[in-house]
Picture 1: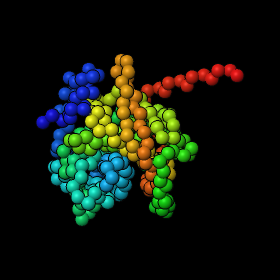
Picture 2: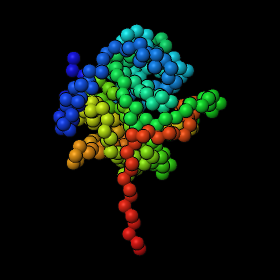
Picture 3: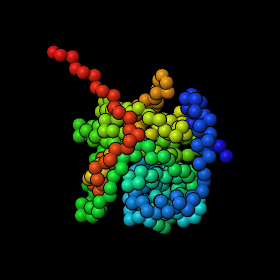
Picture 4: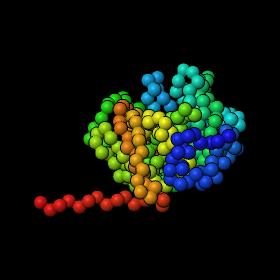
Length: 292
């Protein structure tokens, strides 16, 4: 079975990496290997990509005691968290462990269950540790309750600073063959605030699959998740994204914000300051200001 949709194939061919992608694509299966199951059961957080009832796409952080997300068979995981929809729904998940710079992606169909929801796997694979910042996990903060979510349609100055300081975000995309959750990382400032309703970032070299950019070829809906690793506050953005391709394979993604949800202390997890990935590209220098 071809692991790629037409959008991913289009991007791979445009960038001349179709042969590499075909080789890497052999790692995508619909089965959960024992090593992947063991990794998942150790994780205190899982990022979920799913559309809401209005069709808007969101990346959402789920947390719990390790084991809250676990494999229950060779093709199914169970998650102790609210179901993303009242019935079957395509979802993407990514379990990322900053402690070990490892990540696992599992996409499939979610269904409500007595425990929360299950996901029947359609794609399961791991990624290399590129652009994952290493962090240590502190004891969870069980005394600070989650704050009231703040909703908006444009970033406030404080939210703009939140984005500019980020070294990591998660992105949800969707296509006719399913939903995907992926990760982006870099030095703080790698995500640019163009206006209060538009962000942009350079798409760094990866594994040549181009699942995210491929999905955006057919459906421009996207959802971003930024996390304050020290306080547990999350910033969720839902909107649309498009990618512009430049010389020598360069590419820039622009994201237009339609909805914002900021949730103070949404996560009880507390993480250390980062040890930056050695793969992070240096940021371009800002142009010098002309003397007055």
